[in-house]
Image 1 (spheres, rainbow, N blue to C red):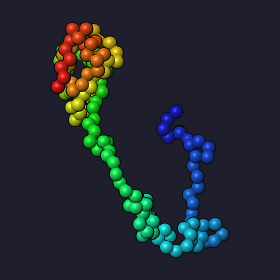
Image 2 (cartoon, one colour):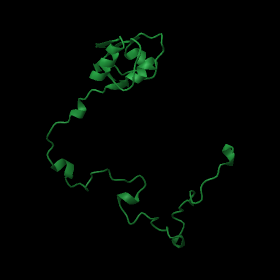
Image 3 (cartoon, one colour):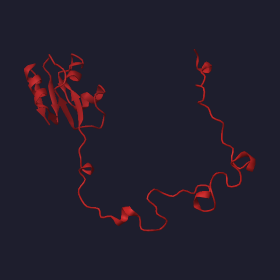
Image 4 (cartoon, rainbow, N blue to C red):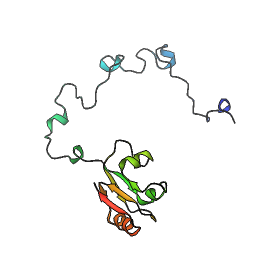
Length: 148
């Protein structure tokens, strides 16, 4: 099968609705837009929350409280099993090494190491946070967990 031999599934392609071609077609005169006004015009749309000039509900209600989502710090998560899969030549692991190997994104500096998976070699890992199981497994393998 080649790209030019692909066919659409039956019923996937619809006829284009032709509006404004006379009353007999069923979409003549106002072309399915109703009467006059803003919504009948091209480009005429009403933004969400607009109530025709009346004071909208979202402006009537009081806004109180605190939203911690505005101040949260994003932490990249890496499992011990991912560290075990790194090259054997690597002995020291930090955010830049993890970014080089595609385990985290380039700009991420806050890294948390979790204890999922097993590690058998001694690694010196520098990260912002460690889970207790990850720290224990690293030290059991002869490595170091350094909190940065």
